[in-house]
Length: 147
Figure 1 (cartoon, rainbow, N blue to C red):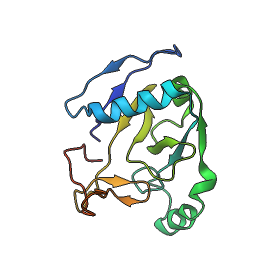
Figure 2 (tube, rainbow, N blue to C red):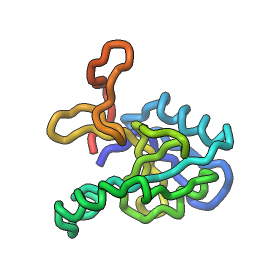
Figure 3 (cartoon, rainbow, N blue to C red):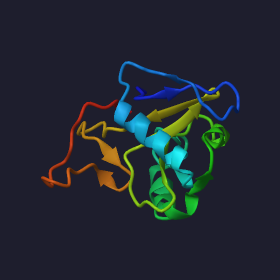
Figure 4 (cartoon, rainbow, N blue to C red):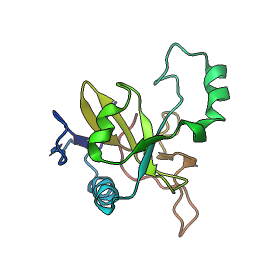
């Protein structure tokens, strides 16, 4: 799994240090920082995929996906991200938003903020599907990390 940003948090300090990775996306990083700086509540929604839940049958994941709205995990402060379940990628978005292209996960106590591409098509994904350029109506395909 490649990541666009790796905020490394070794403790619950209010300021999370950031280490830039090869596929660092400053726009995504700045957007997440602005969300936290504004004080608006965020939510994290687990991505119900075989990669996140390899031992769960696909039909169970598809069933559970219909109830995704009920799986919103409240995030008030950056350090709340450390309470996410280890090893599971989810979508990060403002609580009043309906879509996002920002994913987040915690692995071994480190927070990762990343973009996601469909492994089959290589196109960037959002919570609601493929990312679309509003001006052109075309699927957007910037350079982001594949997951």
